[in-house]
Amino acid sequence: MYDALLFHVQVRYALGRWDLRRDDFELRTVSNFRLRLAQHMQPRGATLLDQAFEHVTAVQLVAFDLKTDKQRMDSPFVASNIREMRRLPLLVEVRQRVHRLLSPAEQLHYAAAFAPYLRASAGQYV
Image 1 (spheres, rainbow, N blue to C red):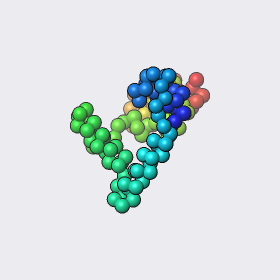
Image 2: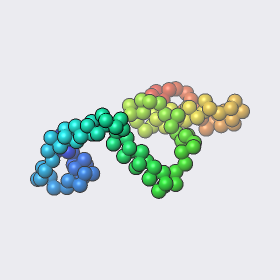
Image 3: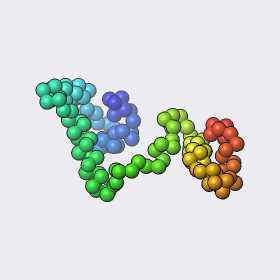
Image 4: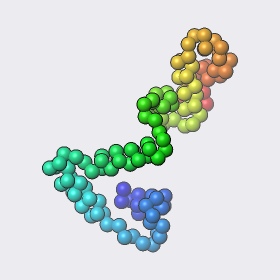
């Protein structure tokens, strides 16, 4: 984290540290912060980071009028190794999974549309 703050412009920009000549961040600050979090958690059993995350999530759900009673359709389609895939293989993988979810009648109806994506695996498509 400290290296990212020192050497990555995007991280510095996100944290509001635009001036690259100025380094007013101390590594001890992170250690002290972690120590204070642990000291707060031990007697109370509650972590402040979890509480902050839940609060931010609740505010965003209200602000963006998000419904949480249904799972997004794209979430179960994508494999856990999504970080290893590029966009095209990922698209092919999703289309193959959608095809498997269709009923036999629907698969027959959309056979021409899905045919190019079903010939090989997503990695072999490219």
